[in-house]
Image 1 (cartoon, rainbow, N blue to C red):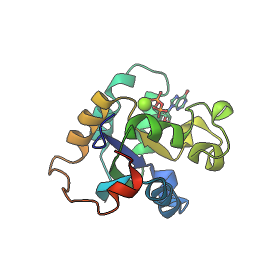
Image 2 (image 1 turned 90 degrees about the horizontal axis):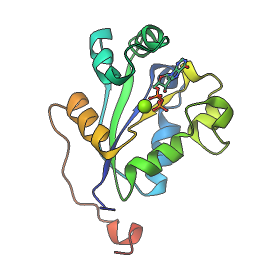
Image 3 (image 1 turned 135 degrees about the horizontal axis):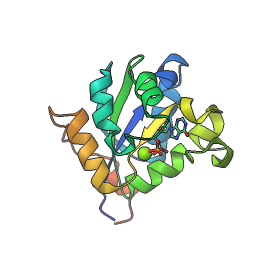
Image 4 (image 1 turned 180 degrees about the vertical axis):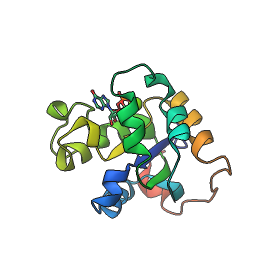
Length: 152
Ligand code: IDP
Ligand code: MG
């Protein structure tokens, strides 16, 4: 419930190529979340294997690593109350048939293997992913609108 909960949100290579970077950032900004880290980076297959280590062994794993390492991604950390759960709701369900219109995937993606964005699935995964993608650390600054976004 902390106002400082953080989620690792990433725009995948297809989201970058399709020109959805601004749209996705705008949704998190407008919701009231605070951007505390952001970079564009083209990572190696080995690095993506680490990011998706819990999916090793799945039949789609080699294709997933190829897709994710095919081009640059936009890696971000967004902060705010329930950032992890709300971030997942904003992304939409993994399965395209279940991703509701109004969500990012529900509005812009059709195929599970080209689903535009990633969001941490728990606070623990968020912490791990933030350390993996931002070993240099994240930015600390005071939000001047915090009292307008949160009641307490
Ligand atoms: P999530 O991204 O919604 O957390 P995960 O189950 O963690 O979903 O899977 C990670 C990513 O792997 C998905 O976002 C999607 O890009 C890809 N993926 C998941 N299931 C499949 C599949 O059945 N076929 C192809 N790719 C898949
Ligand atoms: Mg996942």
